Amino acid sequence: MSSSEAILKTLEVTMYRCDLREKQRTVLWMLLQGKEKKEIANTLHLSEEAIRKHQRTIYNKLGIEGKSQLVKWVIEQISSSIHEPQPLSKDQIFWEQMQQRNPYEAGVNTWK
Image (cartoon, rainbow, N blue to C red):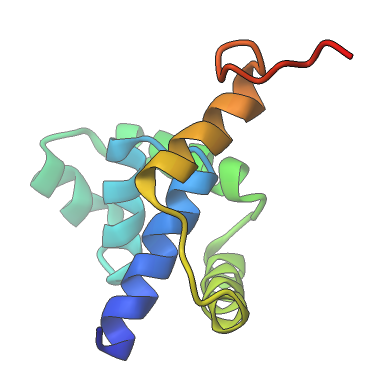
């Protein structure tokens, strides 16, 4: 796996962990590629307002407030992956998300 593929994989895993939906991940990838909201809206056949809403939701889920913090977030994710060489599998991501939502749905016994 090349270093650029490893970076993309790290970011994709992190997007799952942050509970970004498919459309939000698509918008985020396009923002990371430097595309403007108007171009994203045209490509995805959405309004610019819809893209702005997706962007706000993405920023809220990532705990950031703007593009400069988004760049910082990406750098942090990449640098943390150096210390975590094994990304989560899709099954692990699924169970991690389920446990965050409702432990009973994930089949986790919380009775003591």
